[in-house]
Length: 331
Ligand code: ADP
Ligand code: TRP
Image 1 (cartoon, rainbow, N blue to C red):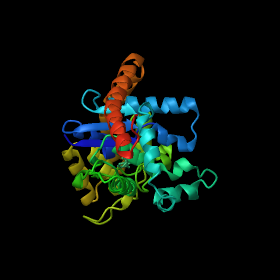
Image 2: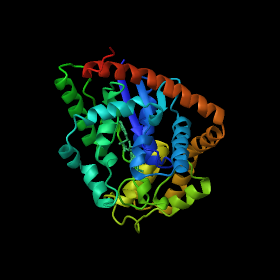
Image 3: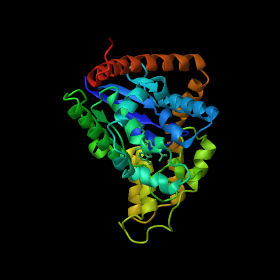
């Protein structure tokens, strides 16, 4: 069966963008493929988190993954650092990686601009570690957003280079999972760009938001003074409200507001109130499940153990074979 894999750095609570841009896709993929979904905690070390925060953030994502519907019985859900074979493959791949090609990576250059005082080797070799994540399970499809495409291309380069160097076709060359039109971008509540935890608390809807918080954020979302001509094109911040509504409200409800926008009778206050209600209906079960799972340490331990066992089984097979290909043989 085809192997699908994706990872996420544990940087805090999941938001609506993470849900519709990643989790929802993972949930449908787990029904159809051999899926590996992991928490990229090695990757997080480039930013030097303290041990307590690191542990807490891993737990947060794990609980939220499961609360959203990822099923540890169907997919292999694991924490990257519990599979040390990844670190071994990372080292081997680093021997085939040129410093120049790493320095040219857009995400690396951006980080250097943002944080000129912390340009560590782990940051430079981030793409090699990501390649190790993917190749350790010989994954062929990787559901990632646009910002990760360059990393994925590099994974293909590294796999191809390994295969050429050792005259083998051992590693398959992974490609992005193509969702076609289904890959939606959830907009930020402040009218600017995509929803992202780096754009401020008030503009981001978290899966953990309590009803009052949720309502406040939505009621404060940016709008204009209303349409003045029938059927006029919507400005970005209004289109954003509709996009959010399309993600959680019933189609007939969205249509009702589309119609009132088009005949200039829309009242944004009513639309936001409706959106806040529908958002609460969508988020409430996930939020409550997150609380329930977070309190169940025993269950979490089981999930982590099962995940690392399954992931290590696959990873140790790859490492054993890679060692042989490289020429490390026992006498
Ligand atoms: P953030 O921008 O909050 O740091 P991440 O970069 O950690 O989010 O995103 C993790 C995953 O969620 C990625 O697969 C990304 O494509 C997806 N994602 C994040 N924000 C959005 C969004 N606003 N709309 C759709 N998908 C998103
Ligand atoms: N770099 C990815 C991100 O920031 C996370 C990640 C790490 C990943 N390893 C991966 C994604 C392997 C897909 C496959 O979003």
